[in-house]
Length: 366
Ligand code: COI
Image 1 (cartoon, rainbow, N blue to C red):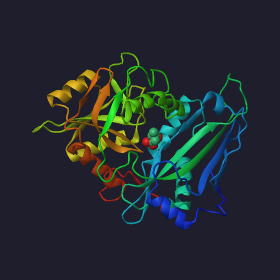
Image 2: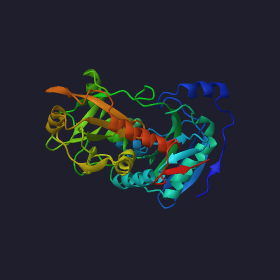
Image 3: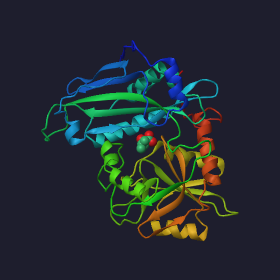
Image 4: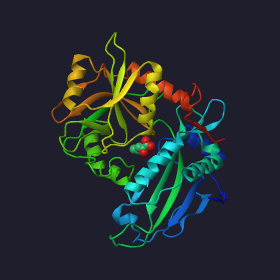
């Protein structure tokens, strides 16, 4: 696939860019360029270009507005200590993009084309990769259905792929040590059901979660925790992040467990990385299941000492307190725990080039 390179004639002034990079927030500022690519039935992927960041003009009858045929990915480019700019496991995001595409009856994209699109954008906008520790350039590849039709008898016959980039600070704010979150158990809403789209990274999963997120905020909580939709017993994930449970009572070898991929939760890249990384640090790791009652009881007995959420945007966020309609409880001392912080330090160390990369996860761009 050849990309046309159309650099922006006007870019954000360097002084303004530096001010943004000093305090980027999350998802509010965007770089000078984007990548776009079109797909049409019969022609496949074509019209690949790197072009100035800008608006799309779309007919009001464009099918994505009506039936939500859409998917996205979340990734980051990191500026390492030696100045290199790298991606983290982009091939895993490419594979998940294609898994989401299959579920949504959308076209898949060859891995090398997906990765090339990211490389081109990050190289072009490399001055937008922040330098402050903990910051990064968040990348948002996405695809939308563009057929002009209200018909619902078949998937769209045309699609637009796009990648945009946004300098990003820590998702939950805070400095080097993340603050512990308070989470809300959603006992009346469901995120995903068997056979649905829970494992795919699609906008509908997120849009449908907002009412529960609002409920969590109204209850003074930071995030919502989703339970299985059948028994409403088993903990699945947190809004946009996976969950890990740490068993590290004094004297015992630490163990981390994350809910197994039943098809209703997102197969996170950070989740997978931590499952592989933990054993190299002497921490046993595995998939399993835990009910809300077990979570509460094991915290009370001291068997379960920490809980954390993980995802690309959030990296790793400790959970200190759980609340729900029938009360709540504190996990450990309610503060970030040592196993969480050890894993976080190692993962960030690999991403920022401060630690060896035993799995060759880092993909150098420039
Ligand atoms: C990510 O972690 O990349 C996500 O897409 C989650 C989103 C809620 C920011």
